[in-house]
Length: 65
Image (cartoon, rainbow, N blue to C red):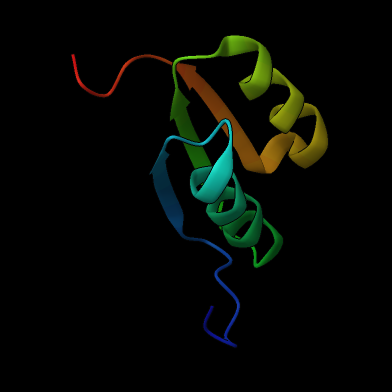
């Protein structure tokens, strides 16, 4: 992760509900980016939304569609 702040940037993360995708979404958010997280599991996305708050927008969808 770059040492500079990502404030004012946006990121789209697929597979954001678990594993590497979730870790990337958390790291980007903690460095100031607004993250749009896409995953198939709306429950896990909502958990992440509760954790990250307004810096995270959950989108339940299958990126393969």
